[in-house]
Image (tube, rainbow over all chains, first blue to last red; front, side):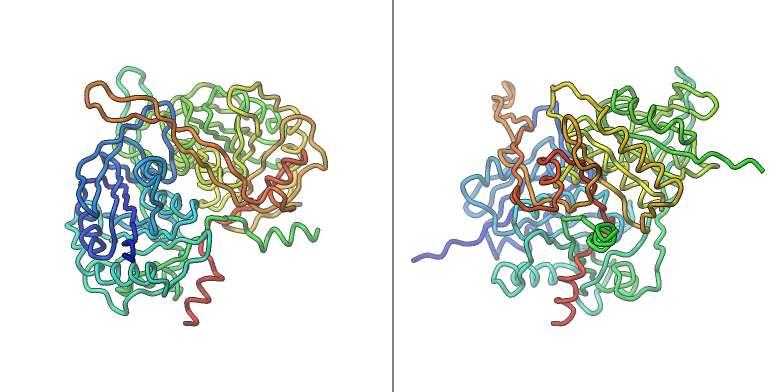
Length: 259
Length: 259
């Protein structure tokens, strides 16, 4: 009896032609058959947005034994949903991966991330799902190579069952820039936010209304707390935060129910 | 000494002219000064998406003592961020409210909801934040009136300190259609997902590629479990789920750290 190779679905938010996706694909291709379904264009900051009122077109870019690559005009979540509904309809993926994102998705950034939107969508559908991101600043060159041995090790462990994610839990993995010290470190989502959200860019000459463009400054409110993703990354480790898709605060809920 | 009235910031994802927003505004206006900053257009399903690469225009629609109404071409999260950066810059809101959404945001829908994106954004910024939604089906008439006494009571309790939300916790309130039995009931997010994600609509006549449009069927995986939002709503109660913006699964994290 021939054992079927496992199937990995890959998406991202930087677009199907992104270098980070190519690195991820190259790393996991020896381990499994792969279906890529990713956005045509840059979809950063799209969170778990879905597209309604616009037709989503499925384009096949490459199809060979063990590898199919597709693009769509949808968001990252649309891409994952569309994969489940079309190209993965008769063969359910064993793993959903997203990335490697160009830019950090650590701490509060997970909320806005299209990459993590794709991961959460995989998780909602009961499939072990992991997002990978490289904490490089916009416009800076990205060297994904340091994180690839960690990607490979994690994917092997997930495929062979050495690592079992509970239902409703997915992983948010972030890599620092440069060599990684101490391997993959399990940690919590650091408390953080963005301030100075917008930059004023002038007025609309027709309406005289003010115009703004998304800006912002990232602030970690607990940079010195050990065990958070920001702390791990600041100390050149790769952070791994297990995320629950059930956002219920059970502690506060219990307190309210006792009242 | 004159005590300043509290300030409430309202946004939504159905757009600044939505009836649900007008109902919410009318209910809370006697309790506080209000700033509305909401999208120009329908932004359902936008989750916590932010807009980059497009200028966001701030339009003032109404400005009088105690009430200012603005619109922008951004997402719900853009609207909340823009409010903090502009019209609420010198006077921080005491409360961020979103809704009343036309359509459910219970259980897993919280992940995709633009309304709840606005609420989560308020919470990230340390402000008590609540989203309200009416579980009416698309295309059906919406009667928001049954939920309004609950909105009023909750807002009074949040403003006078009878109800204190912990930092990093916001509320997702959903109303059933019709009369509400048993008032507001604290509950957990039910395990659920959408299946049959897309509908096939034909081929693109130029490219010959298949086209799809977002569809889907909602499936609650635990309809009979008491204490979930879906259970409460099915029994004509108003559901209130406290949501944590820190998505870390502490239980699984502890298990992994012990290894």
